[in-house]
Length: 128
Image (cartoon, rainbow, N blue to C red; front, side, top):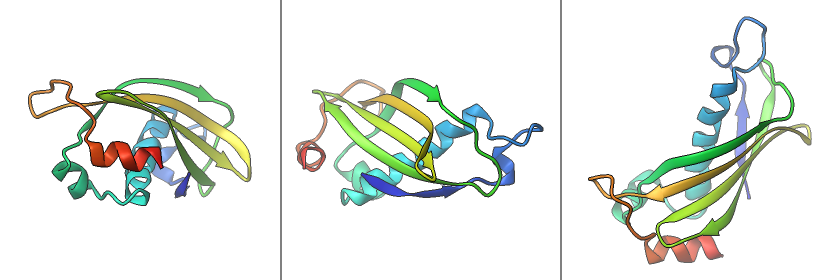
């Protein structure tokens, strides 16, 4: 699902003029928010459901570089939904060229940090 675009800012790059690798995780975090918004869940809605997706693991592939003012398309695919976790695939492209791909596992946790089941309302939305 295409969830939006991200314009690379000066704060995203380091002295070589390219995006610092860690910043791609920040961009994925923005794509995460936009993905759930596209499914009909604002941040407040996710809290009410309740869903608090803690990032447990991410595999990252840095395929190309980005520089200031590049516009990255943010695409997110839900690859799997388990009992208390889900796997999202983030693909960031610039003019149809893959720049970054991240496969992330999120675990739904309660306020104490204990894994808890994915709520039915969210499970249904992710299946559609």
